[in-house]
Each structure stands twice: as structure tokens, then as C-alpha cells.
Image (cartoon, rainbow, N blue to C red; front, side):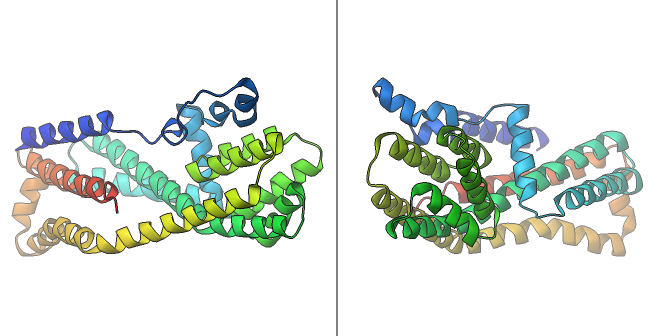
Amino acid sequence: MIWLSLVLFGVVALMLMTGQKHKIGVYFPESDVDAESASAINVGSLVPKKGFKRAQDSFKFSAQSLGPRANFLVFAYLLLSGFIAWYIAFQFLKTNAVIISILVMIALVFIGYQWLLGRRRKLFQQSFPDALNILMSAITAGESLMQAISFVGQNLDNEIGREFKNMGDRLKLGETPEKVLLRAAKRFPYPEFIFFTITLRANISRGGQLRGVLARLIRVLVDARTMETKKMAMTSEARISAKVVAAIPLIFAMILYQVSPDNINFILHDPEGVYVMYYVVGSELLGLFIVWLLVKAVKL
């Protein structure tokens, strides 16, 4: 059964590797444009860095969404994760304690990092349409683009508002729009914001009906947010069922520990019984991962 679980996990990993990746090129495919258009749009300059630098920037920007106490909260989470890893490995399992503690620590850090990314993405999706509405209203009232960007920063008290305020201040200091928009796109490497920066750069360079483009972008963002809410509502029953099924072995193990501790000690401390625990934990994680893939792949 352990080998079967490993084979299934390998199949899922192969599907992820061969599937379509959500990169910038997917949303903005290459096309034949002249040199002037390429310099105005220059999608390639908005592609985020890869490797460790990209992960470092992503973590730094995501941690800033926690507010002014971000450093303290991150340190407290790492301290708590280290304690949990030590307790599970050295006080609870006591078998391969060093390896187990490292694996648990890595898993907890990864979970926290993914939670930060998801939280920042969710906050962005909630506040970015409001920023575009304010921007379009200011432009409709006759304000210039620089004044409209500063107006958004003055009226939004969140991460998006602070970024717009920073953009407006840099534009007032005389920094080129190219550098200002490029820096903003690196802080928010999402397709919606990248399309927004491309629209502004093209409008500054070549002109155009910015108000109409912003209106269509707002409509697309609102529709996407509505569809995401609808998808989560339609899949809520399946997600809750999967979580309940995954919690059943843990609940029965706790009950069995009170009724017959010898059976649980065999699984936790015996060199042969510990493989049963590894199989159960691996199967649970694999099942939850497959459910997460299925929910993520749902398209309405």
C-alpha cells in the first residue's frame, strides 16, 4: 500500500508538471508588434524574477500585508512552528526524531507561506476593483493621470492604497512612469495588475480611451470575483466532506489512545508499527492534495 501511494503521488506530480502553468506568458502571449509598441508595452520587463530572489520578494511583500506588526507575527509563528516540530518529534514519536522534526518544520513553514500568499491575493482581489473605480471617477472628473493615482492613494487605507500613494509621490518627484509602473508590477505580480500597468504605459506612450478600458477591466474583475465566490459555494459540500473524512482517523486514534494505549504505542514507537503511521499520514495528505487539485480545477 505504501508503494501504491508513492505511485499515485508520482502520477499527480507528473500531471502538475505537464499541465499548463500560470505564467505571465499565458495571459500575454507574444505577438508581432513594431518597435514603438514593444517599447510602450514591454511585457517582458514585467515578468518577475525566478528562483530564490522571486521567493524572497514574494515573502517580503506578502508579510507586509500583516500590517505594522508583521515582523513580530512572523517570528512568533516560526517560534511556535519550531516548538511544535520539537514536541511531535522528540516527545511524541521519538523515532527518527531529527528527520521528523525537520520535515514537520518545513511543512509548517510552507503552510504559513502559502497562507500568506493566499491572504495577500484575496485582499488584492477585494480592494483592487475599488481602486479602479476611484481612479476612473477621478479621470472622468477631468483630473490628470498623476493626480488620479494620488487621489486613489488618499482615499484607500490598505496595501493597494499605499502602493497608489507611493506611485503618485514618485511621479510628482519626477520619476519616469516606466520605472514607477515597473516597480508596482513587481510588488503585485498578478495578471489583473499587470494588465492595468500595461494599459497605463500604453496610454501614456500612445494615448487612447483609458476610461473605457478601465470600465471593462472593472467589469471583468467583478465578474471573476463573483464566479470565484460561486465556485467556492458549489464545492463547499465536497470540501467539508473531505475534511471530515480526513479527520476521522485522527479522532479514532485519540479515542483509541484513551481506551487501549498499547495499540497506539505500537504504531508510534515500534520500528515496524511506525510504517503504519507513515502510510496513514501519507494517504491523508495525498487525499487532501487531490481534493485541492480537483477544487482548483473547477471551471464555471
